[in-house]
Image 1 (cartoon, rainbow, N blue to C red):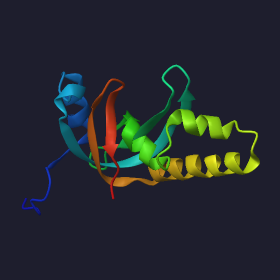
Image 2: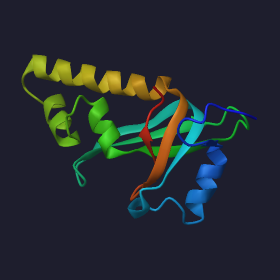
Image 3: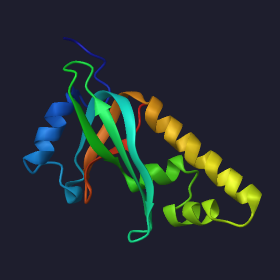
Length: 139
């Protein structure tokens, strides 16, 4: 095999999923897996008032096996993609009476969606309360 030796070795998407299903990658463990994958579809991108967060679910595909799996986008990553706004702030801006605030919020949401749907390469996955989630997108 060989390899650059930088960072952790990649695992297959299905390995990450089964490791999480088997009770690994618990949120409190802080454990991360690096998975080579391709973003196939942003399945959900919506504000959840009960959690005051956006819920983003991304379907990742494994280039090696062709298998796919849906994972959440971790809140911290999502906030960075939303230019540091919390879900509540963005939702408020999207409903704002101020046209320019609304327009800017739409652009922020669109650019976050674009980043998520165009991502391919090495994703950093870990466990959250919502289940398996992406903590870092490929650079």
